[in-house]
Length: 234
Ligand code: ATP
Ligand code: MG
Image (cartoon, rainbow, N blue to C red; front, side):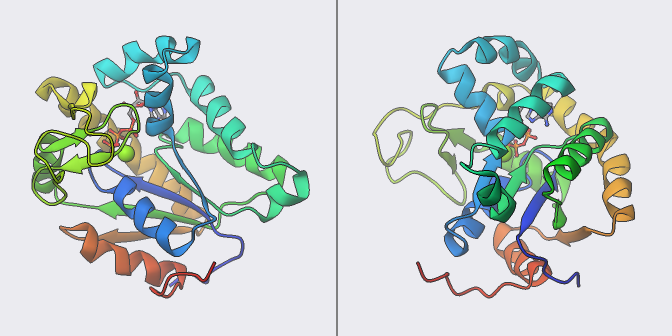
């Protein structure tokens, strides 16, 4: 087990549908102040808001392709630096899901973090059987405006087909609707994960957790991070 280094700056790796978003939600309950950044969620928000960036990235997302490295690197780094002062930035704990996604992104991000004096503390790879992943992607629906995610099997909405909070209709993600697009995302993940895994393994910050369900995986993450399951007092 790796020692917990403060502040916690965690990167979650895992295939599409491996539950990075679910684990992030669970960790946020324990660490309410942690800054959670999901590159995919942020890009989808830009698409929904029809911003210039959103229009630029939609074509990639629709096809299940990665957006250009420079674009996503600048965007995520800007999100990390939203914390007010530099001294506050050095203390801030964060959790990234979906970035870095390939070796080039990882190397350039590592340089950025060195300059900012914000080293990563942990990288955790989630391993879930592919049959599970395919089931999950098929039964995943979202509320487009907020990004809230549902799964018809294990996290269904209270009323079928509509968001619990707003009553808006739920939709499939544009990249979860076609088999060809799903296959491309999964194949890309397989292609990029080995160099990424080796890179973080050599840095001595990689741990791997595995299981069929998010409930099986979460305690393993807590163990890696040396955290207790009791929520932090606020
Ligand atoms: P999940 O389905 O579990 O959310 P995912 O990896 O398929 O995982 P997202 O992380 O939400 O999906 O990413 C959706 C899309 O956003 C990607 O297919 C890609 O077009 C773009 N994207 C997100 N992060 C990156 C990144 N680091 N580099 C390049 N493109 C990215
Ligand atoms: Mg996600």
